[in-house]
Length: 392
Image (cartoon, rainbow, N blue to C red):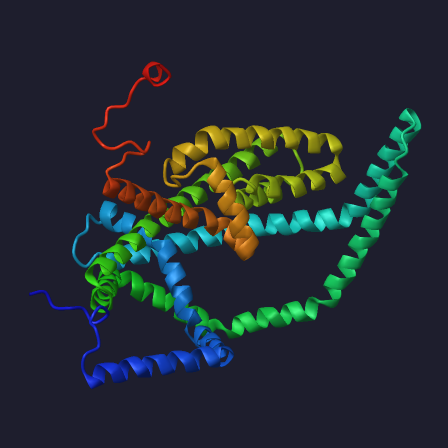
């Protein structure tokens, strides 16, 4: 006879009832002092946050480790450590290369933009004045906005200069947390090295504390969510990198200003589905508008062409069916995720909703099969009449 699980077992002895009453009292005290417990939970989260960072690092590097371990080392024994080392070296090399190539150019572009900002404003004002004289259109409000924007930039510059000590102090605090950063990296290395054993322990805990059916469903849901998140983020990062490179090459060929700064910005914001291209394009068009309105128009047309190519060819080719939801539900998940969790919610919302959507679809099909119905509501095996017979 199958042994009854602890969570489905009915209390029979005095000890069972004592445990039930004690659990109820503990739940009451927890709810009655919820603020205190939440504060302690926050302190605990702060203590274990380096390990949470290690989980994020390990999750990001795991596809690379898996690729090196299976493709390069052919899953030979005692080669997983080399795969982890190679993945870290590639990640560090990419970060250093990106910083070496991009950061100086971005700093120079921002410095030039700030330095020449007054002259940009004056040139736009002259253009508006010429248009007002030639066409007789009242553009005094637009000129006033530009005057205010110049004063606003000066105010922002003075505020940034005043805030420089606080910025330096923040950088110092980050440097003082070197131990936490080192802990995160070390934890991620141990997690990647001992991945199979850790997953086995989690599966054991699920089977130990959950009913058999619930444990199987929980593990299946976790696997399904992992597939959705990994497929979406890996594909989206590759897609965004390609879009950033294409934008830079096209801007360099067209000799548009701030090519590297804008292409990096476009590539980063492209990670956000649907709204990402607009988030990256609008400020970029405004920057080029200050330099040269013709360049702004050319860039606007260029970014429309690039996004059309991405939406119809590059994106579907890379992402494939990893999202698994329609454009309407993608828009819905971005709006809801952004409203609840901000920018992070806009990025995470799509794979998270795709997971819930897949589970809901599976549940609907399960209920239909249980009732003997197909997706149209007809009983399985039932002969459906033709439209001509229905309306006779």
